[in-house]
Each structure stands twice: as C-alpha cells, then as structure tokens.
Image (tube, rainbow, N blue to C red; front, side):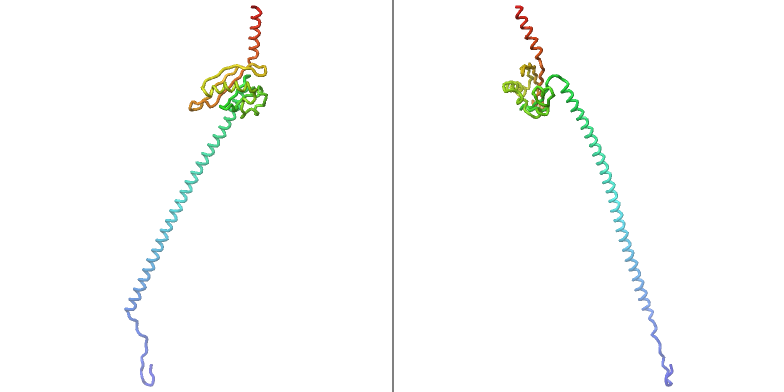
Length: 220
C-alpha cells in the first residue's frame, strides 16, 4: 500500500506448524476418546442386553416349569377327584348292599356301642320296638323296652364288653319269645368297642315244645 510515498506492508500472521500438529493431536485424542467411550457404552449396552436376555430366558424357563407344575397338579387333582367320586359311588353301593343284607332276614339285627347307643339296625328291630328306623338310630336301645326287660338285656350285653365273649339267652316281650345272640366287635387293638345283637322269633317253637310237653304229660 502506498501512502504519501511511503510503502506499508500489511498481512496476516502466518500459521505456526506446531499449532497445527498440536491441534491435530488434540483432535485425534478427542476422536479416540469418543470412539473408546462409544465402545464402552456399546459394550455396556451389550452386557445389559445379554443380562436382560438371560433374565428373560430364566423367566421363560420358570414360566414353563410353573406351567408344567400347574398341569401336573391339575392332573393329580382331577385324578384324586375321580378317585373320590368313584369311592363315594362304591360307598353308596356298599351302604345300599348293607341295607339290603340287614333287611334280608326275619331276625332283628342291631349294632350298639358300650352305652347301648344304636349305631345300625334293620327294620325288624325298629318294628319290634314299635318305632320307625330313624327314631331308634342314635338312641339308647334299652329305652324302648319295659324296665325289667331293659335291665336284663343290658346285663347280658354288658358281659360282651367286659369279657369279650359271645352271649346267648332267651326272653319274652309282648307275648313273643326271642332267642338272642350277642357278638363282640373288636378294634385294631383287640378291644371290644361294639356289639352285634340278633334276635330270632322262636314263639312257634316254644308253643310246639309246650304242646309236646302237655301231650307227654297226658300220656303219662
């Protein structure tokens, strides 16, 4: 530039090569740091993703195991339910069979405990007591007899529980002669916990015996 005959030289300072090197190194280090950071970040994400995948797989395994256990339990419940239904059916059949057997005889049959409480009986027992069957079940059997008869029968039945032996005797009630047999029922320990009593109407036999005795007496 020429001003008033004076030459002035203006210009920009020239760049220092060292600054370029330093700047390049800084840029390079920054890039490496960023790449390293991204690598660590990616690795962390991959690790977390692996953990999540592992947890998901474990949850899936646990879910399959739980479902399998649930299915097995349901099958067992269904099997047990079927067994119970079958058992109930058999029990009902057994009860019906028992009722048929109890009522298939002309003898009275009675199952009592040590107190004389009726645990089971047939219709003949109820009829001879002047009651319906449901009226004597769970009741003391001796309350349906006259006092003297009740005392004598209870004494005989008590022998079963005291000795564990059978008893056999005869008595009469309302003009009917009965032949009575009592049998002990033992538990798993061999103790007498119940007794079965049977009573057979032997009135005709007694009348025949009496008639024969009277005929014999007349012949003599």
